[in-house]
Structures are given as C-alpha cells and as structure tokens.
Length: 524
Image 1 (spheres, rainbow, N blue to C red):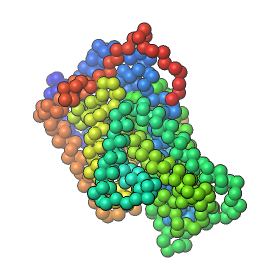
Image 2 (image 1 turned 90 degrees about the vertical axis):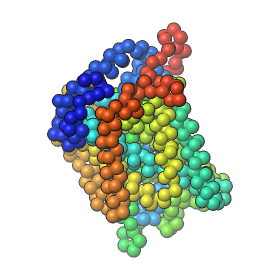
Image 3 (image 1 turned 180 degrees about the horizontal axis):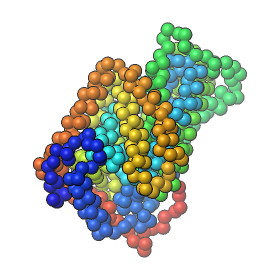
Image 4 (image 1 turned 30 degrees about the vertical axis):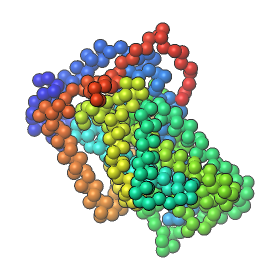
C-alpha cells in the first residue's frame, strides 16, 4: 500500500507490542524510508555538508562547539541566579556537597547518554526519534510528549521571573493585568529571537553565558581577597524545624537537569561526532561550577541564611559594591532568565519539528522558514501554550516540571540501553566506554534518584501528571486514527507543507562553490 494509506491493523496501533515493529508496520516504514531516500537523491546537497540529520544546511550555519556550549548551558544551568533559596532550605554544607557530587551521578550520565544517541542518530527530535527506533511509535511519541510538556512548563517560569527582575530594576509594581501583558511582551521578544534561527540562538547564548557571569565572578573574587572566616561552609540546618530536604533535592534536579534537551537539535550540528562530546563536557563542567562557586562565596559573605531568597545575589552585590553592583546583578539575572527562555524555547521547538519530520504530529509543525530555517510553526505553538500558563504559581510549576523531567530522563536512558541491544552495529562516533551491563550500572544512580523524586511528589501533582500522561496517550491514538482515516492535515511530508501559501525550507540550497562567499574558520 502507498505510505499515505497503511493497512489498518490492530497491531499497527499497539503501544505494547513485544517487538518495536510488526510485519505491517515494518513494510509500511520500509516503503516510507525508500521514498524518503529517493527524494533525498533528487535534492542538491549543501556545500560543506549538511547537518547530522541530513537537512542540507550549509556548514557555516550549523552549530559549532562554542555555540553548542552556550545552548546546552542555558537549557540546563543558565547561571546561579534564582537558586539562592537552596541555602535557606538546608544551609551551606549540604549545598556544597550536593552541587559537587550531583553532577557526577546525575548530569554526567544523562549528558553522555545524549551524546551517544545524538552522534549515532544525528537528527532533529531527540528522544522522540530515538525511542521510536528503540521501541515503537507509541514510545517515540511519548518521549517527545514528555519533553514538550516539561519544556513548556519550564518556559512558563521565565516570563514571570524575568519580569520580576525588571520590576526590581525599575523599582515599580504592576497590576495583574499589566503584569500579564508584560509577560506577553517578554514572550514575543523571545519568539522573535528564535525566529532568527538556531545558529543565532546558539551564538547569542554563548556570548551571554560569559556576560551574565561577570558580576558573580566579581563577587567571588571579592570573597577570595576579603573573606577571612570560612566556617559557614561547615554549617547545616539539619536540626532546624524548617529544614526542607525534599525541596533541596528538587532544586538540585531542577538546576542540574536539561542536558538531554540538546538532543532535539542534533541535526543542526557541525561534525556532531566531535562537536557534541566536547560541548557537552564543557557545558556540564561550566554549568556545575557556575552554581557551586557563587553559592559557596555568597554563603560566607552573608551567613544569615534566612535572608537567602531568590534574587539575594543582587543584595549581596549591594553589600560589597554598592548600588551599581546591585543593579548590574539585577540586569545580569534578568538577561540570564531571558536567555534561558530563548534557548529552551529553541530546543522545545525542535522537539516538535522532529516529531513532525517523523509524522508523529501533523507535518505543518515541521515547517521551517526558507531563509533562517527556524521552525516557525513549532515556535508559535510553544508560545501559545506558554502564554496560557504564565499565570501559574512557581511552586506548582517547579514540582510539575521535575515530574516530567524524570519521565523523560528514564525513557532516554532506557532508550540508550535498548539501542545498544537492538542496533549494536550502528556506528557510534562517541560511545560511553562501558559495555551494556556497565551502562546499566552507570545509569543506576539516575534511576534511584528518579524513583525517589517521584515518591516525593504531592498527591495533587501526581494526579495532574497522570491526567496529562493520559491526555498524551489519547492524543497519540487520535493522531494515528486521523492519519489512517486520511485526514488531510496528517498526509504528505514536511517538505510539501505550505504556510499561508509559502513553501518552507526543504533541504535544498542554491549555493555553489563558485557563488558561496568565503567562510572564515571558526569554532563558534
């Protein structure tokens, strides 16, 4: 049968089949792949090579190591601004120990698993594509769904905290209606920046990752030269009535997660087998240090932990440098949250675009601007969801985000193990240097921590999560049914979609070796 009319079989829709493809699905998928391969042969190739995902992007517009470092840094860490309340919850000693150890048993396994998958299967969509290959289309869809839900929940935080910092800077207050309009304006700015393309986002993120940390570095340098008493580093609030260990663990998960999000742009990388491993290691080290060191020296500069709430770094800056450092800290914090918003919107949009490429969602979500190659429809879709959620309170968003972070992490790690078993011969430019059994032990701390975080969820959050997951399952089967029923919105390919009559980027380039301008050698 033609790709648009696969045989309607109960096995085709089963998410729990023992093998990841039935005979009917296998035949159907093979026909799709042959058709896609034939179409690719007809397309001229981009000069300098395309992205890992074969999108035909000129090499000069792909993400290099430094741009990728900036993108990873802001989708995961984004600087210590906003993490101050962790000192209030447990005291300096647990914070220092936690931020020194947690990256090795949480961030590093997740990051290296993402590197292995992204270099073996460098295509947009990340875990949505990889889980589909490892298991079946149902788990591919759910992998993308988990990432999208976690992403939009995180994104809903950033307009609020960015506006809060701006209001502190201007020493003003807004009514609820005006605040919502302000958040909407911030969302529009970030959407406009993302529409410039992933290369613009990566380069901007790299530059801002340096600028936002300059005020914190000044604070740390002051502490190194002027602080004489480091005894607060040994303090703990474990005997205080208001010690909150569950909140502390949640903050660690929130601060040091997100390294798997960059898998969604694996098809946009320059030489992914080299770029991805280097950028991931640098981003994990820089991200972990940028949390640990400012919190360490902030604790000795102001050892009254009851004062430590979100935004307190600016107050410490005022203590040591006066009003000018206070305002610089506030501006840096606002820029940090805005750039975090920009980077995470970028990766979230590419999750949705990658799912459209694989026809797990309507192909229109894969429409990319012909010049900037940004997935405009996916960006606008994320914008709409975020705008509707930005009135939620931060504690609700925080716990809900961690729940879907855990779901995505578990599926991503299990996918990495499964693909080692089912696709052992696929070339892996980078592979975690242990066997499959060793991989299970390497991931064990992540699994244990994930189970603990899930057990700590409130009944309300658990109930909401179950409802959201159920909605995702319903959406998946509805999309499958609409495709089998011949709904026009699920027919065709991404390349055939038009937006208001305009064709999107289809992987072709008009450049030739003679007409293409010289490209400077750069690792950005």
